[in-house]
Image (cartoon, rainbow, N blue to C red; front, side):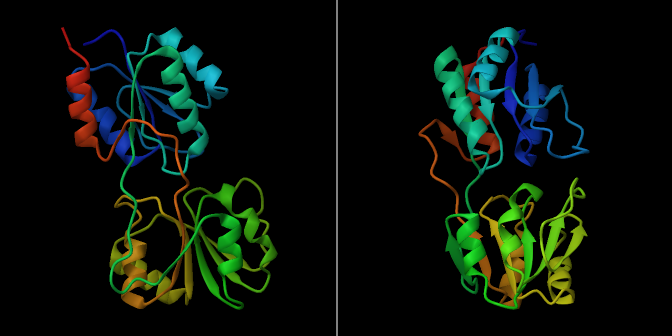
Amino acid sequence: MSDRPILILGGTAEASRLASQLIARNYRVISSLAGRTRNPAKLEGEVRIGGFGGARGLIAYIASQDVSLLIDATHPFAMQISDNAILAAASTGILFVRLDRPAWHPKPGDKWSIVSSLEEAVSAIPPRARVLLALGRQHIAPFSRRGDVHFVVRMIDPPEVPLDLVDFELELSRPGKTEDEVAFLTGKRITHIICRNSGGSASYTKIKAARDLGVPIIMIDRPARREAHVLPDVESVLAFVDEAISLP
């Protein structure tokens, strides 16, 4: 095993799979999680939880652990940590790659309204709609001004503080299979879905279900990112690591 670790900024399914496969290749791996999920899935290898304290903190951590390679496999909307990762890699001179899963694209039958922010999404909801908010708890507040809308808020963990919404119900669950999502949307009489274009397969079933039912989606587009070395999937990142690092 290489003594110098690979640091994965994780929190996604791809990050977990990447850590497992790198360890299987005899690399030492440290996975870093932001700590927003209360009971994260068990990860192979070393794990640290919590923020770094900005780019300077990440730079200091990289130096203290003698990190050989930094992989940003965070959520596509996790802008701050991704920006810090680019700055830290440039400052320390270590190898860097971002695993950025491809965004979703509308297919025939999809009814998307693409917006660029939460605020635009709030304004795009028609009066008296029944809306599935498929967003993290930290993104709910802007919708508090829409008292004319019934929200179904789906989360993995219960919120730590009461949601600041006028008319809502809370659903603590993960996305299911497409047929489960169809039943869920039908049972809740959902007229619109609001979600972010996260890409990946884990939450795509709600997109397929909306297509099957003709339910419109207000899709929050991905923000512009700093230029960096980007790869689209776990397999291409593994190939990059194998080529970049020579194991003894």
